[in-house]
Length: 402
Figure 1: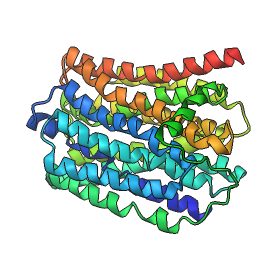
Figure 2 (figure 1 turned 180 degrees about the horizontal axis):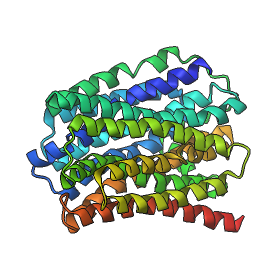
Figure 3 (figure 1 turned 90 degrees about the vertical axis):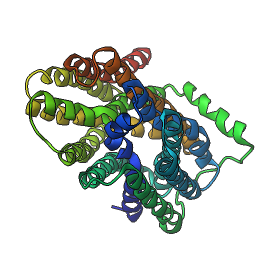
């Protein structure tokens, strides 16, 4: 495996250290700030709103500027958001702003990091290793949940946790800038002609009928994935209380971390299975399986804690099964010169879906009995499955037009 793959994957993992701080401390801060589930959901969603707002600027400009510099800047932006949250967050408004900055920082590291990798690999290696890189998103999530679950078990305050996350993100800003080496891919970079002219080409990607279903499918995928990740911790806590099964916060956090870790293998397997096959049809089938998985997971909540925990583990694997395949589909269906704008639209649509996941689940919880309602959690996970259903329907529509 090329050195740049190791470097980009592991630095991206560390860049996501702060991902789980808010979900881990959500219940504590919800009580401290007297937030409704919908308000807590909006704070969760603000992360992805920040991502969507920052993406057209930071990702599309990788077709013009060195992605290494954008990566460094974005890591520092996320570091700033975590620092501000640690020192000044006190209500739904300012917490959403600061958490949105952290999401904006991720916008400038995740896909630009993929651009750093793409431009330093040949065509064959690119299709092979894109899924490895995207799967490390799951490892970053697992690392973050495990780390801050451990930290919380020692009763470290939320302020100190956010401060620690900002320190890790600061350190992560520099390795790719200094050690990733020069590009080997021959591509003609777009001249910089101002912010507006950088953004406009993004929307021409809607004309790319081969890439578009992967982009729209990614929106449904991330709605489901990030809604799942935002609310799984409170859900498992509810289930443990409902079935009178005592588990610690650290146990729950490590279970979620394990889900993220095992999701790496599911994502890589899904992506490798698609190589040389009809990727669109396979990804459509994966979406159907995931939708069924959401229904079975919701039903398991009525039977036992351990059955529900196993189903959550399986459901997470089904959610991420098509993750690498969706992004690879966007990468390979187009020219190298406009890959940045394709990935920008891919991220914008995807994380717009992610921005909706947390608030929608919060809304369902608020309107069907709250976090102590069995029915509310059952309906919430049925709603999550609509993301996979949307992805499947997008592929079926475009396949019918082919």
